[in-house]
Length: 170
Image (cartoon, rainbow, N blue to C red; front, side, top):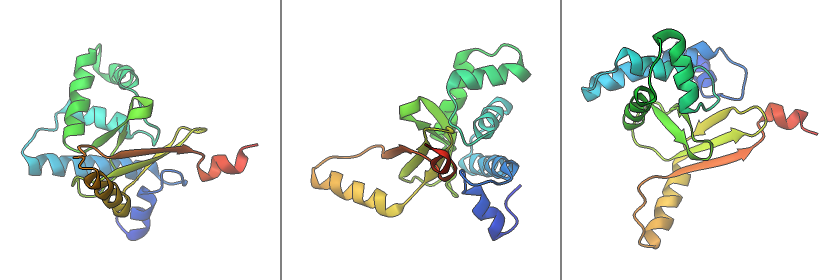
């Protein structure tokens, strides 16, 4: 279910703000179905379930945690099942891998186009928020080009405290 109005759409972008998280999940699944159909690839039930598990919260989740959650509904899946599903979701731009945590998070970028991602990761509550500032991406691209470097992947991870955790930190 896509967001109905601008206020709901704004809520979807607020990983650190209180919001109806079911809207994030519903929107992500709807966008995934549309993107896969447009790309001519199949979003199988297992792939969709893995995506739902990744989107269940704004906390990045490891592959073995996905496996454990998948096992709750699908018997005894093997690790390759989860890794294949995660690889597919990565290839389709539906999830990102948070390198520093060896975990995955849903892509909140609207249209699935390639984009330079930046992540704000709260070290206290574990929530993460994707931001995609084109100026940061352009600056990195320019700096790499000045060095004759062909960047293949540009991901920035910033660890700190979200607004709520910063307010309660001693």
